[in-house]
Each structure stands twice: as structure tokens, then as C-alpha cells.
Image (cartoon, rainbow, N blue to C red):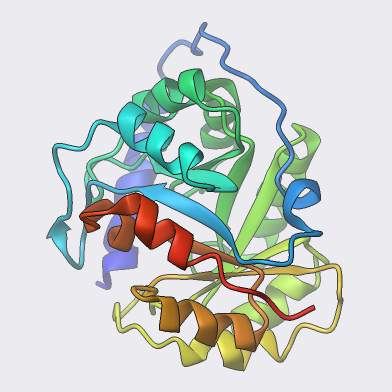
Length: 257
């Protein structure tokens, strides 16, 4: 089994348990647009991620206070904050998302492995503005079902791909947000050239490309900017940076018009 296979197996168990529980009563909904806010920017937009751990790296910053980290990200120019809510593999929780929603006024991405509508409903109630759908984890039919469900809840959808076949599948939906993951979710190998290769398949100027994973330096940001990325999603680099302010400022490089 690949790591992705193991994660999806756990998600199926999680969904069964979620359907046995009462729906959350706390409503943290804030309708804050992402796409419309960043589409006219001339510099790289940042989705800064709160990420305690990962399957490939183990603990990254296990003791992080998500509230303090989120406030730091907002203060230093993040266009959105990604909150990992998976516990078994990333040590996150939906409580992290709820807590962050209380203290920031920028869009929140619920970063999880969505396989069922109930996960999307809970993310919305917890304060998410964007949800992630991963092509590698879903059939065409399930991807479209969850995509339409999320859009029906006024959520934006980040459609994630990491190869040509997945890009072809996702483009059929004409999405506004496509995330190109430079990390192969089956091998966890990282290659920034993935952004260049897959960006060339996108012809709609209204599609916003987001480069994800493996971005550690200003030079990396400049590379994916040349490939056509308008946004980057960065987790580990910000989580371990000794000077988050300096690192985030250096990443806001000019982008291609």
C-alpha cells in the first residue's frame, strides 16, 4: 500500500464514525472570498499552512500553537491559511480550524483528505472557506459529486493534481483553483518541474494555479512564478523558519501577468 492508500483507508473509518456522531452545534462560518481577493495581485500570494507533522517528515513543529501561528501568518501577508485537520498522519484536528477561525479574517483552507460530503459539511461549520479535493484519492464521479456539493455550500474548491492524467480529469470541471502538488503522493518524491509540466496544460486565463510542496527558498518561488503559479502553498518552510516574517516577505515575488 502507498501512503495515500493508508490515509484513505483511515478516512473511510473516520467517515463511518462521523456519521454516528451528532452534528456540531458551533457555527464559525465567515464568508471570505479567496479567488476574487487575490486574482488581481501582481506578487505571489501565499497560502501559509499550519502543519505539525507529515508522513514523510514525522514531527515538524509538534508543539505549535495554531492560534499564534495563524495570527503571525495573517500579520505577515498571508492571503489564506491552510489548516491540516487530519490527526493520524498530520497531528491536526478540526478544533485547530475552529480556533484559527476565531482569530483571523482571511480565508481558511481545510486541508484534509475529503472522500465524503459529511467532511465538507463539518469543514464549512468549522469556518473553512476553501476545501481540498485530491484527484489521486477520488474517482471522477466522486470528485464531481464532492465538488458540486462544496460549491453548493459557497465553498471554494482547491482541485489538487500531481500528474497529466489527473490534470486532464480536473480540467473538465473548469475549476477556478488548481493546485499542482510537486510531491508525488504515492512516492513522496518532490520535483518543482511538476508545476511547469502541468501548468502548460492549462489554457484558461481565469484558472488560478497554485504550486504546492517543496518550496523552501525565494529562488524556488521565483521558479514556480516563471512556470505560471500565482499562489504558493507553503507549510514546512514556514513552520520551521526562525524568522517567519522575513521568510514570508521574501516569498512575495513578482508574478507573470
